[in-house]
Image (tube, rainbow, N blue to C red; front, side):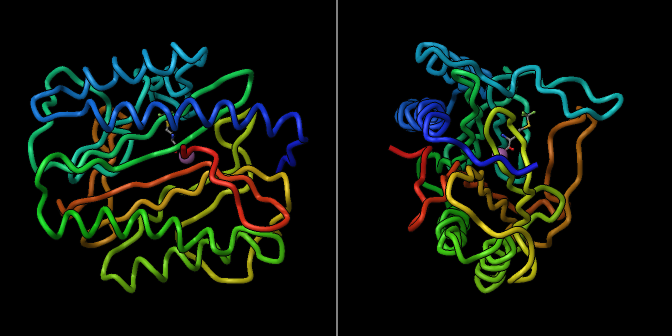
Length: 256
Ligand code: MF3
Ligand code: CO
């Protein structure tokens, strides 16, 4: 069911989203080569909690038999890891890495969801272009995030833009509605046909999240039940914000 948020609910959504925005600002300053992804998780969790919020990914149950609940506060995926990388004391961030972090904060019963890909020190020209194209794919997509358009218009635009840049989109995971639940209807694929899907209406809150692969589109899941990597070993980047559909231009809620 697609939920339309009331004025009051939108205020609460904004608060949850601001928690994540502040977290990324602080993480951007703190993330350094030599740190483990576990250390980043600990820092992220404390930034979320000090704002009176809860890291909603911790204990998240995908509802798939045999898959354990997600064990950490953030997902942190390096280079050829696409999404859902589990923080670990053994995973050390190096100069030249691209590090995708995806976090959901729960505050006052509402969720805010965003992802960023950080470039650690000097990264290759190709890695930088991938990160920039992934971010731009979000901005291209939200040109259609307003009344008069449909979900498929956003999806189509993201897919076309990414392909025009010589990259692939991940097809197995998608953006989503968000609110009291981390994942609400509608699903928002990063590819598809224009003019399809539900009509966009003011009061919808959506997490738009292009996941882009430098090479071929295939992915693999690791034995931990969570980590997704590229099949061809090429790099991958992720960029996500929670947005609000309004009468006019969308509002990006997870940015400050
Ligand atoms: N934050 C992710 C998303 O963008 C979901 C992560 S799955 C979890 O939808 F288990 F880590 F929560
Ligand atoms: Co999301």
